[in-house]
Image (cartoon, rainbow, N blue to C red; front, side, top):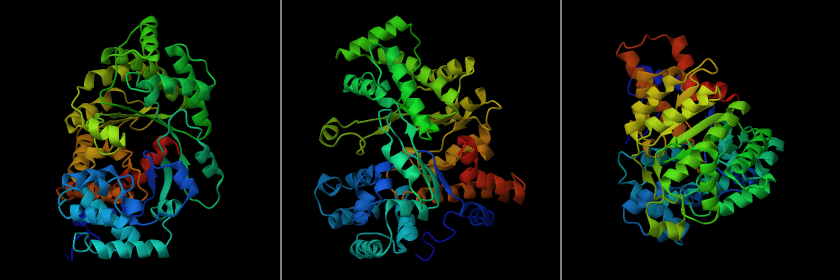
Length: 466
């Protein structure tokens, strides 16, 4: 095990090693999409133990544990922290080939200075060593962020949020990271889901807008976008299993809205007509504000009704959808572009069948407004693997401009997940290094330094305007 996850992990050529160690390794991190809690960042309370830090909200780990037959008590329920950690360690030793295995060990090394592989045999010892490190060191959220060299964090926030903790963080001295909100209007769009009418009533109250029609919803959301902008927001995010595009006149959309507010069922076609109106109006607003619009495509959520009723959303029962996305995505982008109101946009797919779709969609709508104005977002969630990251970059390189890629984001709720950036950078340097070694690109250090540092950090800073 002497070479297990050593300094040249994944760096299988001399050029890859040079690119990573000289250019990528020490670059700061711009985490432009994550699910960290701004309240937790501000309150900055230390974690009680490694189970609290690692297992309290990580559905990646829970899914793996369930696949090894671990009962729910040891995943999300009442087992002791030690018992949960041991159950995870018992699981991890079987996760050969899973990025979770690499992420866990990168985190053990970087944050705990523990280089022993985690397994059933070592679980008790590593649990004690990790907790000793936590008791004697600074494992508060802000310290973990700074130790990871993170300079920008964009959290994921609902339009009704008051952004209290973002404001407090902006006034705080001594924390070398900007924590900015991101505008996530999914609940205002999901007209066919339970709780829609209650949400709209809350939106009306927060925005001080009387909402009697779908156009009032737009008015309220635009007000909230202005408020988010005043607190430093530069990114919006919307998630769809399939991008909506179903044009309809205002009267028809308003009738659909009234049905939903009256508690009547809204079918998928009707929901698409409503979502199309909202998304187009918001897209124009994002363009006006100079924001970037992120569109995450392909998650099929809450598949297990029994467990959803027990645990709620985001607990590890989502998977990859297989909807056709090319035509509606093209039409929604074109509708905005035709009015010269298409904002900078990052397209994320969760099904790798859509790699070519998204990588070629970019070229339809590029402009001089920004370098690679339309971006092929990094591999995320179920594609956040060695193969997924490599394939995403290969498709972007084959069909677009890899050198202007904005790079990695964590999409995580964990304060030690920044090891994923190292993982990504090693994979990126390995890929580029292999091309250099094969004579597919000249070994021009000046240009390669710009490309590697750009994908690692600099491109994102320029693209988002941080």
